[in-house]
Amino acid sequence: GSVYPDINAQAFYLGKDGTPSKMMEESLLYRLHGWGLDEKIAPLQHFEEVYTTSHKMVRIYKVRDVSAESKAWRQQHGPGYPPALEEVLKTSKAFQQIHGL
Image 1: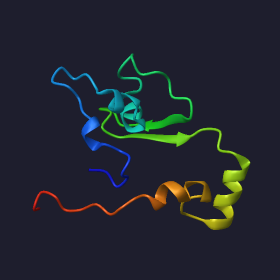
Image 2: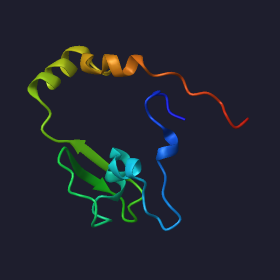
Image 3: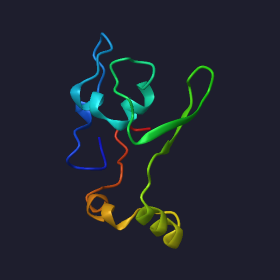
């Protein structure tokens, strides 16, 4: 499941032939993982790859073009989420144990 009620976790999958579902194909995680490895993935506009291990098991990106407003907020408040995300974060719920592990 997802911690957000409007996200259908069942919509994120790869078919038997490796083809991603529409939801998976549009996800940031899929795009960050596959960029430069799959020619069908468009170049990333807001992220720059800054480190990749030789076998591409670890890839680290930085966010491009962070606004002065965001930088100032982070400088003043430290780690955490900015106010613009408050409404989205309010809809989240804690993960629940579902497989008896």
